[in-house]
Image (cartoon, rainbow, N blue to C red):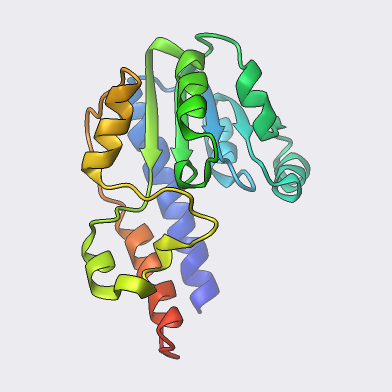
Length: 193
């Protein structure tokens, strides 16, 4: 049952993210780079909608899966340094910024690859969220040592301003918080998480 619910929610969120991108970017097609694309389900959704997509993923196993399963063009993290300037209408970073070792350098490189009228979508765990306050040290989104950074809306805004970027809009991702809460309950030892 949990597996079926997970797949249903993933499909729902893929459509929601794609619709949000097309609404905010005011495009139904264009060039899109997903930084931290994982195994490629989101890129596949955008490709299916007619977008020209590329991905960056540090996990070789995830890259191989995305390439084999969906025929996607996925690069290793090293490619970030050699991205062509002003190439992408949209860049997405769905829960990947918190994993990036050279954060400031990577932001500069991705920003350079974004077209002047392009849009960058970022999703990160909110370190001042209600679930963080409830779970404290058990909050799954701390995920040390995999998560190198923890962001609040204020710290993300300050980081982006440092790079000449600004947050235009913020949207909640309730299913992300629900998943993090489920993991947090598991970490607390609750067998009914």
